[in-house]
Length: 164
Image (tube, rainbow, N blue to C red; front, side):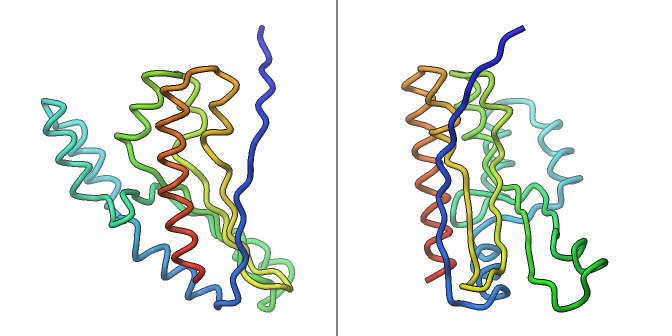
């Protein structure tokens, strides 16, 4: 048995924009594939070039796609009522970027795709993201960390644009 301590850097930004506007900004920048069709197309790809083509077709302008979402606010509203603040967890990424990290550090598959949390608080809409480079730093592989830093830059640029 092994236990590894992994410290995490959290990137956070607060916006005065309405929750719906922040979500719309994120949604406009990431792809939203039909995941059943996507999975079928990934399986059907016979070469890496075909796989790249499948993925390139579904990612958004940010280079990322949505894998799933969890509307935490909806769950909270069931108990606390309609005035409960919104809270949404988006799971997003790019399978090609994930592959590059996993090639260097197999444990990267535990952290990718990434989570983006968007929630309303008294002082505005908070957007939080745990930096992939901080997850991978303890593994001591500079190639994996470089890929992770590039991913962090993509995600953080997306979040800054959505909140501006």
